[in-house]
Length: 92
Image (cartoon, rainbow, N blue to C red; front, side, top):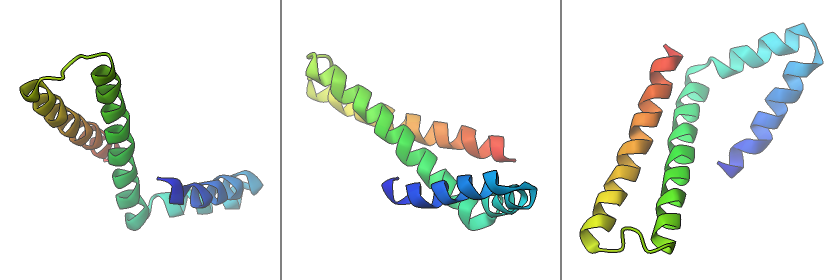
């Protein structure tokens, strides 16, 4: 996630230069490697968010039992995959 910040900043700056730069940045964003990278980024961001919420709940003693902890871990993974699948559908 962190390593994509310079590339995204460059694309943003390119898109603000002029109309041709905007079109060029759109072409980059619509390319297959960037689309696959965006899917990976959406998965990692959604997993990070959901795991953070899970850990906050664990900090306030919710879901500390082993079975509840396992279930919440599976829910985090499932939620990240579903979020990524929703994003993938929106790309079509």
